[in-house]
Amino acid sequence: MSFETAKKIVKILDDKKAQDITVIDIQKVSQLADYFVICSGTSSTHVKALADEVEYKVGDRGSDIAYHKEGYGGATWVLLDYRDVIVHIFHGETRDFYNLEHLWVDGDKIDTNLLLGD
Image (cartoon, rainbow, N blue to C red):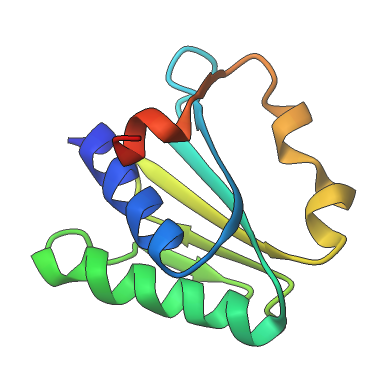
């Protein structure tokens, strides 16, 4: 189920023109979640729009309402926690500064083209 949620989130983000979407399978290295979905927005407005769209479209199934949300006010890093899938939406240099892809290098990177069906 968590893979399908991650796949749906990637599609939503791609449709809203998120940049550099990355999915990391962290099941073997952490109990925090199964997947991290990481992307960037082009402005704080875009970051908020991406977060809003994910919340709206993932939450439409009722049980997938975000368990926790952080950073929406500042919109430099919005985190949406769906328990098994954690979404990180960054703006500008914030993504480079925190470099989550490097911190979670032991996780398995998933080709987003496979998730999008390309």
